[in-house]
Every structure is written in structure tokens, then in C-alpha cells.
Image (cartoon, rainbow, N blue to C red; front, side, top):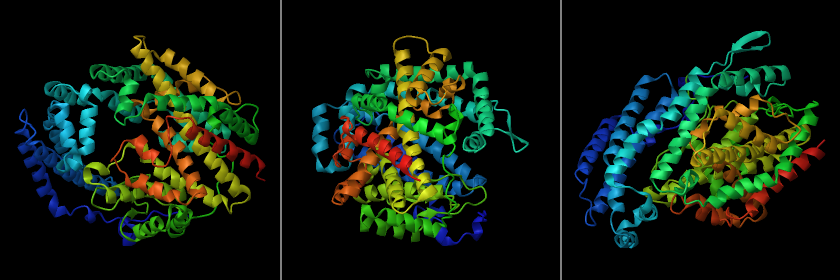
Length: 590
């Protein structure tokens, strides 16, 4: 039985060491340094030229680094105990400090962009500007989309209300949705998002049905409100794309990563073409659950009882290390050293932030927050989060501060590679129900991350194109389209009921437009990479180059180090074949 310990009772070997970032006595001096730098930078407004631009860039970089250290430290300390108000207050102070800094220096990029292209190109070639070569490349590339200094300042300030749709939905979704109650084992409980996720995996179909209906009843009752919030968010996306002279909102969203629209279209085209594979899986799910017709509330219940094996942290970590041997001896040695060196906060303690993440600051090793309980899910969480951590470790070790941060587009690849390698390692010896569980786990990972996120991506494309055509985006239009997509992606074995047509209204990621497709391309790349590493050990060299690239090149170029080209259909074919073969393996497993 898992027991929650008080933090004071957790051994130091199971806690992260945040003093590697900074010590408490440094905080006020660092805050004052940020204020001083902000003040000195204000003096350059309207006066940036070729002679002083390097000084400005270095000052901005140094100050951003100090802010990052302060912000990460404050929030990680707060995550140790969310009831600890001093760190909540410190986090708020740092956020306000950062807002002032970035607002007061918003003139820098437009001022540099106003320089002649020949001057910018010359600076980019100058060794003194090497740290900023990617930054200057972006300035040159985005030159036609940057506005005047005054206009940029206005747009920067508009962020405080332009993001209001996301905030409004968050408040609505977390506070105001009238979910009501559900009956579980004869007891009435108030439905929450967290409880809903748990109930969707409940083996009792009646419990799942009641939770599903209660959840959607809350959104349907407020659909006019939530549809106006989302339509407003889409209109804002389209407005900013138009003001900055992009072809459309999709082009704007992809532009920051230098991703051609063809990648987005290839994803949708490939997954649509392979929808039959999803239909086969859904039919298998229907037969396994022994129902005449599957319901959408049957899509998350496990088809196989989870293994009852317990994985104490030390044992789980060693399994992960063994599973990741295809990444090379050096990689595994660093993993083992990380466990001893204050990278990981392992135990669940009172008021600690739930879930798991990897975070950190340049110049310090990465950190990982866990709440390890010893389940098979926790085993995969270790592999996933350490994948993020090792990606950051190699990027930070290889690149300068200005080029170490990697794009969200590639951020989920290394973590998912680790999960895929772990699944394949465990499958080597798994038998019976344990084997079935792993195979179904893998299928659901691909289903939810590749198929479902692509369906979301297609819906987002529709909503934005509707506004861009000057047509109204009513909830009826959105529900009709969403039901059509759900039917196409899931097939006839599951009922596309009235409730599921409202699912779009409860997806928070839609308020960060054209974001979810990155999950789908990420798992596509991860499956390709894992298979490469297992079939050709020499690919470790290319993979280390990928891990070490940070933000020193654009995402497609970095993925290209491994021979993966998302502008072509081949990577998607590999992922679809993996899904199909995994289903075949599950069908023949006794």
C-alpha cells in the first residue's frame, strides 16, 4: 500500500537540490540587477545602432537568464508545497518583474529589424555575434512580419487582454462548469475533471456512462457561453495573422518554427488515409468488451487488467536504464548519475504539486518532479520525464544559452522515444496478460497521441478557415463538424452520439491555436527513431546530435539529422505500420 510521507521524512537522496540553481540570500540582489538592467536598456529606445546593438543583446540575454533562474527556483520551491505562500508570493513578484522587463524592452526586436538587411547579414556572419546568429536569422526571416516600434509596443500591451479568452475559458472550465454529481458505489460525489478521468477507466460500464453524461451535461448547459469564448479566441488568432501579414492563422502559427504548411497537411492526409487501422482497433475494443455497440465512454477503460506488479523507485529506475541501453553507455551512465545527484524529487508528500514534469535552468543540471507510487504508469513516467531531462542536459552542455532552448515542436520526441524503447524492452519477456496490457497500452498511446490529436488538428483548421472566410462560427456549426470528424476517425464500431459532438467545447489546448499537431508529429518521429536505434546502433551518433542541437537550427533541420523528413509521407507510413503490427500482435497473444 502506497503511503504519503511528510517531506521532512523523505531521505535527501529522494529530493532535488534546488540550491544548485541559487541560494535564498542571492534573490534580492538578483531582483535588483534585473531592475537596474531594465532601466539601463530603456535608454536605448530609439537609439539602437550597429555600434551598440551587441551591448543591448548581451544585456537582454544576461537579464533574461537571471529572470529565468528566479522564476524556475520560485516555482519549483512552491511545487514542493503548494500551501507555502511565501514562494507563491515570490513567483508573483518575479512574474511582474518579467512583465515589466519584456514590455520595456519590446522596442529591441523592431529596432534591430529596422536595420538594413545587408547590415543584419553582416552582423550574423560576425564572430562577435555568434551567440545571436539564430536570433538574427529570425529577425531577418520575420522582417516582413514585424511592425513599427510603436505598433509592436501596442501589440505587446494587447497581450494582457488578447489572451483573455484562454483565461476566461480556464476560469469557466475549472470553476464554473456545473458538472453536478455522480453516484459511485452507492455514494454521491461531485464530478471534477480529475474524477472524470478516473471514472472513464472504471470497469463498471454504468459508472462510466453516468460520468460521461454528467460531464457533457455541464458543457451543453453552457454551450452558448463557451462557444462565444472559443469563437472570440479564433477571431483573435485570425486578427493577429492579418495584422502581421501572414497568409492565414495556420501559416502564422507554423511560421515561428519555420514549418511549412505541407507538414500539417501531410499529417492530416496520412492519418485520414489510415483511418481504417483505427476502425479495426475500435472493433477489437468492442469485441473485447463484449458489447453490441461501443460507446465513447468505453474508449478509455483498460482492455486488460493492469499488471499487479509493484515497481519501487530504485527497481523502476534500473528497469528504465536497462531499457534505454540502445541509446548508448554514456546516456545510461548519465541517467544513473542523475539519480544520485539531486536531479529528481521522487516522493509524494502533502501539498506537493501533483503529476510529473522536467524543468530547469541553463548552467545547472535538469530537474524532474515525480510522485512515485510504484505502478506501471509510474515506470513509464520515469522514462518519459528523464527523456526530457536528458534532452535538456545534452542541449545545455553543447549550446550557448541563446541557442540551448529547443522548440516545443521537438520537445516531446526524446521523452516518447524513451517510452517506446521501454515498451519494446518489456515486451521481450512479457507473457499472457502482462503482454496484452503492454500492447494495448502502446496502441492507446498511438491512438490518443497520433489519431486523436490529428482529429483535433483538423477541427482547428476548420474553425479558423470558417472565420477567415467571413462566416459565423456558431456552436451548431462546430458540433456538426466535430461529430463528422469523430465518425470518420473512429468508425462504425462506436456510436458518435450527441454528447461527443460537444467535445470541442472542453479542450483547453484549442486556446493555444495549432498546438496539438505537435503531439502527433512528435510521436511519429519517436516511433521512427526508436525503430532506427534498435535496427542500427550507429544511429546513436545521429540521435546524440539531435539531442544536442537545442535551438541551434530550425526543427525540421534538427529532425533531419536522423533522416526524417516530415514534408514527405514516409515517416507517417512507419508510424501507421507500427500501429497496425502492434494490433496484429495483440490479436494473436493468448
